[in-house]
Figure 1 (cartoon, protein in one colour):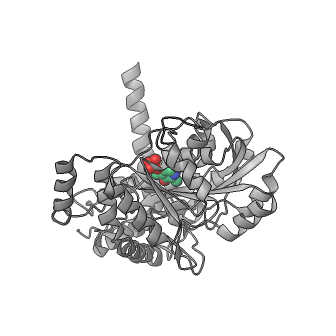
Figure 2 (figure 1 turned 120 degrees about the vertical axis):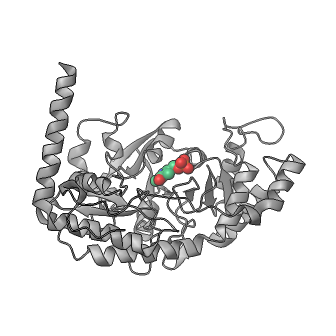
Figure 3 (figure 1 turned 135 degrees about the vertical axis):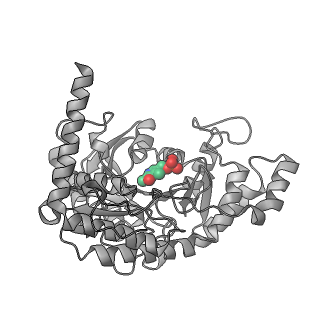
Amino acid sequence: MRNGSLPVVLGGERLFRETIPLVRPLVPEFEGMEAQIRDVLATGQLTKGRYVAEFEARVADQIGVRHAIAVSSCTVGLMLAYRALDLEGEVLMPSFTFMATAHALKWCGGDPAFVDVDPEGWNIDPRSVEARITARTRAIVGVHVFGNPAPVAALERIAGEHRLRLVFDAAHGFGALHEGRPLGRYGDVEVFSTSPTKLLATGEGGVVTTDDEEIAERVRTGREYGNLGAYDCRQPGLNGRMPELSALLGIHALGWVERHAQRRNRLADLYRQRLSRLPGLSFQKVSPGDRCSYKDLSLTVAPDEFGLTRDDLAAALKAEGIDTRNYYDPPVHRLEAYRSPGWSQQLPRTEALASSMTSLPLYYAMQEEKVEGICHAIERLQAHAEAVHNALEREAGLLRAERQAVRS
Ligand SMILES: *Cc1c(COP(=O)(O)O)cnc(C)c1O
């Protein structure tokens, strides 16, 4: 890291020679797994074996829930969970989430009805949920966005009062704590993801958790084609199984979730403390007593105060060798598959969040000095905000002119 005084877009030197990635999965070392990998290969038991069973038992134990069912992905886990609850009709969910929350419902014949978010915690807003309930409403889906626990108690109360099912998309949930306890025990059922951008990575995969015997049974049969065991089935199922080698990765990674989450929280605090001093930057509000997993470290940019838009900031950081991603922009209601006139008026807070938010690099092995460097880069950009904005505009103008010249 070098300490040039000008941002790269104004002719200064890059702070980082190599690009800092947004994420880097934390994977166990081969040495610790060698004997078990040999065992899987030697026995040929590649699926439906002891390691999936062991992973499930350990997840259930760590969370403190009766059933944990390993699946091939969180998307498939959500499909199986929605099916297990017979979710047809209207299901309330945030639009400020990853598209799979809604896709899985569509595959089950359900109808997502998008609800606005709380502008501070960035999770589904219980008051907007209550206002949106109709005679067709069957369920509520909460998402623990970026690993910040959703307002569990309020949603449980509303679901109870209106006799609605309650599901949590806990894709970002490993490493998060609600009132000091792990997620995975709330609502009727929760579904975790173990894909590589999440805290616990198994290659591909997910885990469905519930205390409900019947839901667990339906998810278990559902991931097994619906087969009841005697080559008959009550409902059409899927192949939703997690392979043994993935479960093995999961078993080893599970022991690290706590340390991983603590490390992410330490780095997130560094970012937050330093960048909160700048005008116009805000972070996700985590309730006292809760812990965010910081699956992503995101911030919002208020251009009037900061001097640059979110897009300016992302472009200028790219020039410094710093990777960013605009989760979740566009939000789900603006994706072609869900687009319909009217959503935008109903979701003003979602629109405002999505258009002002970006995520900064955060991963287990990231050194503090990298976080300091990124903060320095952002401070430097803000100090030269007007010149940076003008330089980016000129660049964009040149690019447009060049494209036009190529076309004509
Ligand atoms: C990643 C993610 C999913 C999908 O997880 P897969 O395991 O990739 O299917 C679903 N919901 C949210 C909020 C996610 O971030």
